[in-house]
Image (cartoon, rainbow, N blue to C red; front, side, top):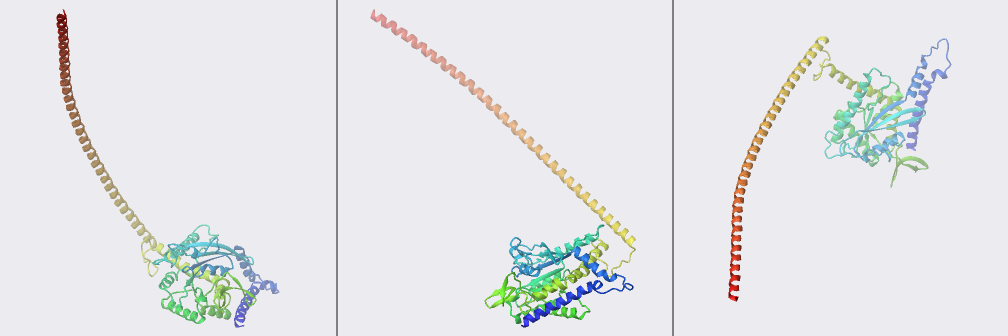
Length: 453
């Protein structure tokens, strides 16, 4: 009963605040007007309201934390839509070897009001063995969006300036129960001057209520000790909103539970997680801080988050950027913010310095060019001398081979001549022997004939 009454009173306060706001907006329509005293400027809020609804709203939300802490589930639960689905999985399903900033956009509509929501996630954050400088891509992304907005403001046509600046960073803390890790402290110290940080205790259903309270105290103690600036709720003169802000501030860091499952509990359909001991309801103030986080982030403080981003973080970035430009390249800005020299004289001095620097660079480049030309010429001469030397060697080698061939040819001619002479003598000897044999045969035949007769 205590849970239902607490959540019911919370919703009743929201409805009453909404009704009061609508009553103030429609004041000029509902109340009878005294035509003599009525001018019409009381209708200005209605004009602003209609123009804002027609133009729509933009909001950029960054989620940072280790994989497996329920970032995707919480985002889907906050906006009651499938920002992350099976077609586009969450960061834990897209673990990278290095930290990489990725954005996803979705257009949400509710009662005729359009919200262009941009979710910036950082898959790979805190999942490596060495997490040194894993925050650098995130810082570069935030600065790049500030830079884009500053450039858009400096253009001639500034009618439509898309606001892609990061308005809020939900930093998910693992439910260890032992305080912040060194990575958590270092990350928040690096980003607390650039973005609105809202710390969250992820998967709060793994902690008992006592452990959760002690864990919150330990986290806030370490945040204060390290002088980390998280998002501060604005001081408002109205008593009701001041009380609400104090209640919200007491719940920081928000202990949240995310779930996309609809379960049956006591005859009601609730969003929660089923356990053997019961159901952890997402929208139950006794179980987690999901409702205060959603109300703060969307219903009550979204515009304040955008205002703080524009009036504090962006202005700090813009001031540093413009101060660095006016102070000159490579120079540190004057601590007092003023220069003792005349601006025109300072400009002429900087111009002279720049021209002298350019002349010096030009002379150095000419010297380097001349040295390279000399080196190239020397290399060409050396290669030419080497080629000439090799050519002479080849000529000598060819002449030597030619002499050897001539010597071999002469030797061959001599051998050939001697061979022919010896062959000729052998032929004559054979002829003589053959003639001798013929004479002897004739003589034998004559002798035989003489003997026979």
